[in-house]
Image (cartoon, rainbow, N blue to C red; front, side, top):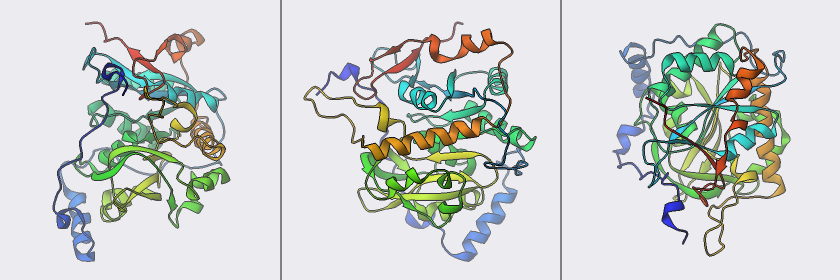
Length: 353
């Protein structure tokens, strides 16, 4: 086994089991009651969720050089626990492979800092990781909704934990997730009937390869089952489920979603790992069950090009070229400190007091 100091502590224990009847409201009368209750509950977000002017390919390209804001996470590491933050370099490579660039959005940034950053970037990425969504994550998603409501086409992408955050924040319930036995497993995607007409899935025929062999890399103990998603009005009204996968216990969970009225997308799997994560344990065995086939790489690239293409549809930019260069992650060195869990990562020092 690899030296424990070099391994990321990024796995979460499965949640405690909850009664099935409390999680699965399939009866029509119960669904109606839940829908009516959701309208009147005081925790309902004050952000009005109305569709932007237009979605999809018909939007004009407004920037040839999109910049993506990537949310960094606290670093669970024996030497730097709870102080530093990190971003896996595979996300940045994935963005750059499609012509995008990336800047960091700190996990503990103030609302003013977050608002300023979103005004300068063309899209937002919530990556995989460990923590629950914080106030900053909620502010970012609410602001992205407001931008779209006001006519700015602003895309959001969530991968793995980022997918889960989109689900939790939309449901306004951190306990909405289900336990899934899908840690370190490659899976097949089963498309829903809605996938073929969706913005995401209709983008590329390369996605078809994910439905014919286990090529989607999964590293999660949590998710939301297909049944639970369909029985949760706040989710099924806002998102369309595009694909499901089955965990080791044979339970189908939602693997891909897109918002019905916003350019928001989430995948429970990791498209960035197929081309960029090759870590090996001390015995030479690959750390992750990740498919590196030609077909998997093409699908990964198609996801990246779709998201960056969405980010080209607004004209956000930094005030000057110097400001932009000072913020893009070209200026930060990567490290192999978390190998083999990640081949390389960006580690950020704590903000000065």
